[in-house]
Image 1 (spheres, each protein chain N blue to C red):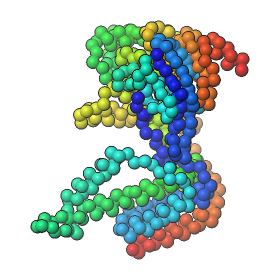
Image 2 (image 1 turned 30 degrees about the vertical axis):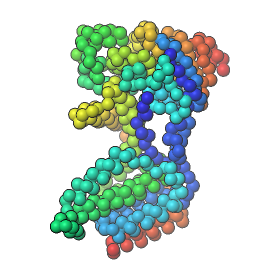
Image 3 (image 1 turned 180 degrees about the horizontal axis):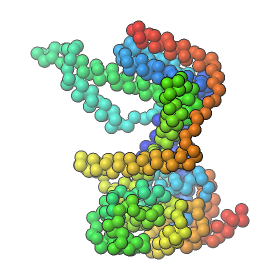
Length: 222
Length: 260
């Protein structure tokens, strides 16, 4: 279980630019939980994402996975960023999925299949020949190949055309069962297809927490 | 868990209402350029003392808290110390003789002189960054470069290029943070050999280069889409007492640097 206990974060602490992004966030995510995090700009969504990905040490509180510290080194976490092109670090799809891992071609093919890409067509394709949606799926294949326990997705659907969006929603809907997934997004259109639980952040606090349908209905009424 | 890439505050504006904050951006650019060029052209200890005295006066006048001072990473200090050691081995006068061994400090003194020179010039840039909104730079540059129009220099294009470079810096820093994060998440093993360090750096640099080029192309397309660069804004210049004081002190400082 992933637990956030009294987590808060202040950027540029003890400087004239000090800015509080999160305050006293308490959260428990069971293994395999699928959660979307919504909220206005500046509400602390990205900070929460970076903390859950293990990229940022919170100034206050602690984050634990099964009672121990969250560790990038032990591949507990993975994160897919909005700008997929920045995440593709090798010239071809196959090389990129294999990057940083000691895996064979079959594992690469499995990772590509998991994200809905035909290995025969894509394995040797150059990264620059891919569409925006394909780039996102290759980036996702790269992080899934690490077999993380926690996956954080930052605005995975932003800027995609309808077919690319539908393909990615289908991929997100069939992610491995035990994988805890946290999707940070402004886009709630397909929220119920990719998550069971929704959190609303406002001014660095969790202001709503519940099933996707309940939380979105309440937000719509307000 | 690890920390993210260090937050970058170099050239970041600190809100305030000090005399330096209230100065016209063009005055500050003139001061930085004037003192900077003079002290680099004549980097003697006395010249540096004059430049440092003016810098200290500016630091006191801008009333920016000490907590804004950029923190230098420890590895950088080690690197600097190593460079000093290498400079010491260069020898040169003055020399000290001890038990039949002579040690020349000429190289070390030159290293120290150029290190302090760099700190002073960077100090001026930091004060400019702390006290000036990025948006104020473009109209100030337009005014300062105006005489070059007579020589048919493409002033509008130069000003647009400089302004875009400064404005895009935060974007580039943000993308570098993402690149660094991606590299850490997908290759979390800490490099243990020089080869691994070089490969790590190579990935980051290539990624940064690709990202900067892509941003530049997008920016160029956006400028084209809006019908080109267009004339830079010409806002009225209103010099106040702090501007006159700063310009007088700068003129005095440059004169001293040249005479000394």
